[in-house]
Image (tube, rainbow, N blue to C red; front, side):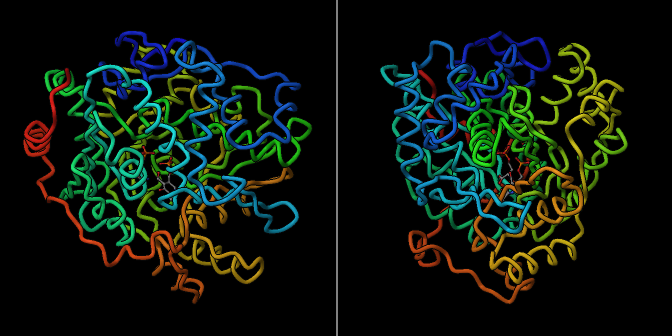
Length: 464
Ligand SMILES: Cc1ncc(COP(=O)(O)O)c(C=O)c1O
Ligand SMILES: N[C@@H](CCOP(=O)(O)O)C(=O)O
């Protein structure tokens, strides 16, 4: 399988190189040259497989000769062996046609673990036997950071520099990152919002001297391997609910558009997906783009769903590329317009293509709180605020097919918002129970390339 950049100018790579590279050298994002298709029978054959077995089957067509089936399966077994539920991502029924897919049973209690536990192992595997040193630079609005740190802390040959917006992540989220005191972990709080952190990460990749000298790599969903691992749970859930014999809808709390794009990939591979509901909070750029064609940045507002406080959604670029005829030059021009002015319009092909599968909704804070309360009172489920955004949208836009809402985080990560809405104060699982006693370590830096790039250059190890 070969990987091409959405902006058409970067070298075409294989799976191993795309995984280690992260962002493409032309500023674009890597995508497979074509979508592998699963037949009806191949999807049916996933029934009854364990999560790691499903993962290996679904991902194998994408890895080319980087790994054979046995090697990929062994990595999946190791990654998902760290989850605290036998099903890895269990389904919970709320009522006759509404389901939750619990994605938060990994080490850091959010869906990011599903991809990052595997990505950590892929990095190790692909670097094994070389003296290459990798420098991961990442941005987080709360959950990617801790999951990535957990996945690579203490590993030889890798340093991680993780930027988070100071004061804009929950206390649990911050402590999950800053209490990991491994020497290869560097937490940086920036004065700014997530969009600024993400822009700084992309600017570091654009500085080719820095990127090449330190072999920069990504753990955000700009890295294709992140998304690939997230495709798996769409298959896993849909097959459990009757696919390929019936279509399943998914509702996804959306910020950087990675999770929902993974659902789009599953549909392109042949999974019968009735629809994908893109649920946003008041930072609604994606809802506006999908409902009116206007992709224009607003100011990031702080909400009770901090992980979705994002106005520039990296992976939307992948969707626009795929729906717009995979024309790298045209997409590069469209993105340049957006980067220069903060606004651009979707083409007819992009809008109409999206409308065939995606529908969207902006969920207001009160409706989010109602969704939390209702899940608690009617189904005995305490859900986190991000999940509640998607559940509120699922109830409004679901339609006839069964709807699976992705439950992206454990409610104890956002304990104050959950308590306000439900009166219940969920406890952290015992495995992270001493989080508030642990020592924290991070630096605070201005949100400038000079400050952040300088810090990375000072503390990173040059690649061999
Ligand atoms: C708990 C939670 N829900 C939803 C999202 C949004 O997911 P995505 O950025 O893939 O759209 C995030 C952040 O990624 C998150 O941490
Ligand atoms: N919500 C995310 C933001 C980064 O998204 P990613 O999927 O691109 O890593 C977070 O929790 O950090």
